[in-house]
Image: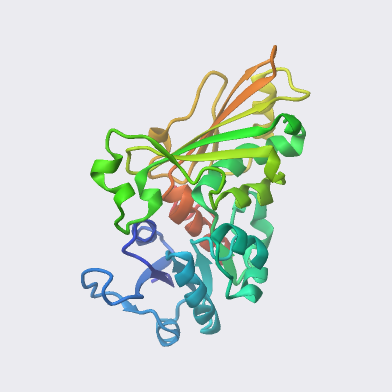
Length: 328
């Protein structure tokens, strides 16, 4: 018997991935929580999504694998019942009601919890996560982008005045399980499309974490006809750097003690197959010293490192467990 943890939204793609990971976790016992009675077939193990169930089941943590509007409703209730919450939507990521209103086009209804929430990217926010009551699990696109960009920006080797371009491709599961025309088989198969150009909700997470201004960063999300995985190709001009080895040395130093970062040697570029169903982020670099052109490729599994795996990584930190538990 491990620590009992609730999962709301366990039928969705990210929620199902959480169940998969937690069922093999040596110190956690997943408890499915039913939020909507008509959300799918019967699950005998499920308990109601209620404060009473949090107390009766002695849940230490509740994962919310729910849309932002549902998380805004549920998170305060779970917190008031005594559970800590890891929210996998964008409801608590953006720090201020004004920022949320701009990118989500609606009013934030829980500004106090928004201010208290801790952004759950362990590689850069680890010190705050163990004490957090509410962790805002990062978005999948920002995870791949921030892990690739932030060490280089901190080292001052990116010419920010020349701009940064992030060309990001994701599998269809990133859109969630709710049926829609744009993610139906006939629309996606043998197709490749861009969406939310210049207005993607994940952009502010990159700006906030990497320390960029909006005019310095161009991001385009694209849907590719695969189930899972994200590959981001990031272009910029190098500054005070002579070779790809210089950039790789920055990554290797910054991530030397990080268990889920894999830096490829010169000439090796990540792909989605290598990270599928893992909590790894793989990073590779190509650099042309004559022109200063740099290309960084960052690959993750959007359902694992981009969602459920990161959430379990955060749970491990919150509960004082080894960070890699259940993930390696």
